[in-house]
Image 1 (cartoon, helix red, strand yellow):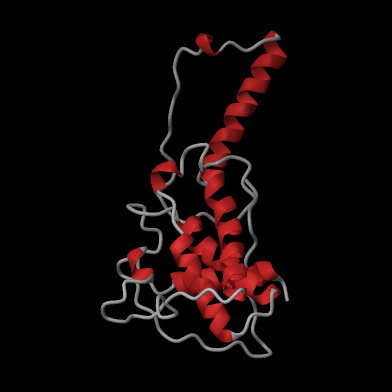
Image 2: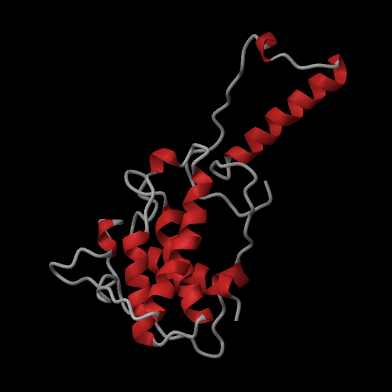
Length: 198
């Protein structure tokens, strides 16, 4: 079983319980669900039992989160890097008998768990996978980001690099001060991008 599949499926399952899972007012999503997915995948790798898995995810929740204000900066790669590292750490701590509130994923009055990240989070029971279960990763392609930016911005960055290279080929050098104006076309509304290679 591919550990990437476990992590991505955890992310898919939990985000479908929020009507606005990409709540840009709070946390960069990979820093939240990425930490949980990493904990889930590491728990599988370590063969943790059900109680240890619950504690690993609860510990991961205490380690999760990065502000979306940094999502468009060079700090963005830290979000997923820390998510990976901290999810692994959470599972290792659970393997060594550290405990946390295993109800953090449930909608329990007085227990502000995952809803602290997503205010409209309304969980429901997940079906256990059967023999015919297919992972999210088997149904969609993934894109590897070359720039710390929204996937849609990769085409813009590629176009800018292409223009720069053409100017260098034509003139032998590139001087940013020579740019007189920039025409910006608003092409896409904020919407999920298909996972195509940028």
